[in-house]
Amino acid sequence: MTSPDLDLDSRIRALCRDAGLEATRVEWLPADLSLRRFARVHTTSRDTPTLVARVESAEDPAGRPAGVAPEPALEPIRALLEANGLPVPRRFGGDAAQGIDLIEDVGDLSLRVASGRLPPAERRALHRETCEWLPRLQRIAPVPGIAAFTRELDAPLFAYKADLVIRHGLPARGRATSPAEADAVRSAFARIAAEHARGPRRLAHRDLQSANVFVRPGAAPGARLRWIDLQGAFLAAPEYDLVCLLRDSYVELPEEEIAEHVAAVRPLLPDAPDAETFARRFDLLTLTRKGKDHARFLYAARERGDRRFLAHVPLTVRHLRGAAERSAARDPGLIDLASLIHELPEQPCAR
Image (cartoon, rainbow, N blue to C red; front, side, top):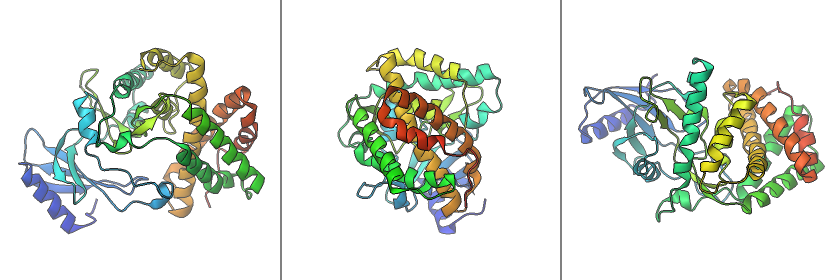
């Protein structure tokens, strides 16, 4: 891919030299929903033939609630997770002032891609291995100076997700959203926020979906995964990362497999929530997480002209419908939200 900035190429090459590596080529990688940029840097080193330059870009304020600070830098949360044995990329150097980090090249085989190539048993094992790291992540105690421990999934974030659903999700029905419908979404998300506030908080990756888990072919179990996109880590309910992984918009897992993964990891979590509490929060967080994802996919198509993610709308809607039905059966206060979700088409018009 053509370099977006020849001067940036030069800065990356200079940072590589500072790290004791000689860059021979800077190859820019395709962009995704994030505005952050990545380049694969080829070097003369036998031990490190490639690495990745991770370059911060001016963020889109629409990606967070008003008044909330932008996501923190990759460091020091990456270093903290590495020190606690979590499967994160190594760092070779960089410059915080320039917003550039030189990190381990985790390859191109994400769990998302691998899931479509591997036999079901192997794909299942990789998901199980990812789940098994979460008790260790959730046992990390707060560390002063690390922003992840001052950030949390709270009422303003739930309200922000509700607003995304109202502005970008519900219009997929092909008609305007009424004030009463908007109020029903806000009321339901506030109800979910209150339920979440009553539970424990643990460190969460925040975006532990298959696109952010990479597989190292040939590595032994326990050493074959790498997590990326770590900077958004925050405090949330113990179920949060499991919702991201097991109710993924990119990989559809059989319901019996989701139940098996949950049954295996739930008692190992530091808070070890009982099965009913776990199931209730898991479905509530699915509603808010998938509601946000659904809205963002449509926003990307309508506002940015990026239609790549529309292919993942059908699965996202199915996740929402299942969670809405189960949640409304437990709590009649969510019936109106469930009715609205039931109206969402699996094949929306993105114009």
